[in-house]
Length: 261
Image 1 (spheres, rainbow, N blue to C red):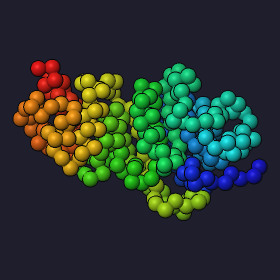
Image 2 (spheres, rainbow, N blue to C red; image 1 turned 30 degrees about the vertical axis):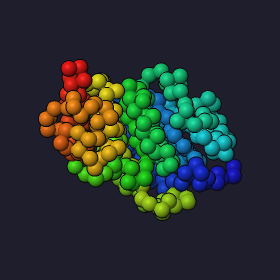
Image 3 (cartoon, rainbow, N blue to C red; image 1 turned 90 degrees about the vertical axis):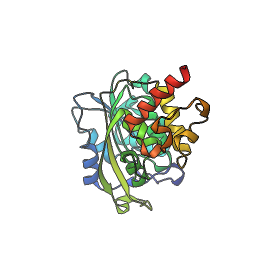
Image 4 (tube, helix red, strand yellow; image 1 turned 60 degrees about the vertical axis):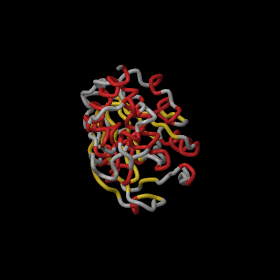
């Protein structure tokens, strides 16, 4: 089997350190809640090798790179239809996974945010995710209110998932090495099945607040609710980065009341 050449336009950086691969796979700890796992962007299968040894998991792979798919088809003939050639971002997950499942991967940096939003779209099914991202993205997801890294992804992910920053990975463990460090995080679905507020408005409020993060929410949210409808609630005079997830839920509840008045 000839090796797969990493493709820059796909953001491929193949992990070469088996010990780190084992640490990533061992990050899947909530397997009492699911038995199927989807690996996104397996490349040449350094994570897949370890996943396929796990008797408690039924492993699926998806890769957009036809060269990788050909390589993996020859390497894992037993997978059959569980090896999917295609784009994860366009994949109909519910047609493949009728129940709950996990996602794992050394994710391409160029689509990392889109991957996380896709997971959020399927939060009822994706009960756990262990993934490697650019360190800056991993830290942003795990950051708390008040930090400069705290943003849209931080709030939306933390509304539905418990997040843990697991460890940092140096560039030298990849081929080709990226120019930055990587970070591995774990998302575990929390007990919040639905938010106690209008969820569409919650998303609009979070995005609206951070899209103009230097402004107070009174100004940043004027496209969502006219200023003359706003009252003197303390949150309107704060910036988005100052509000916790719970604060955003409270603010959404308040906005709903103002809009209905």
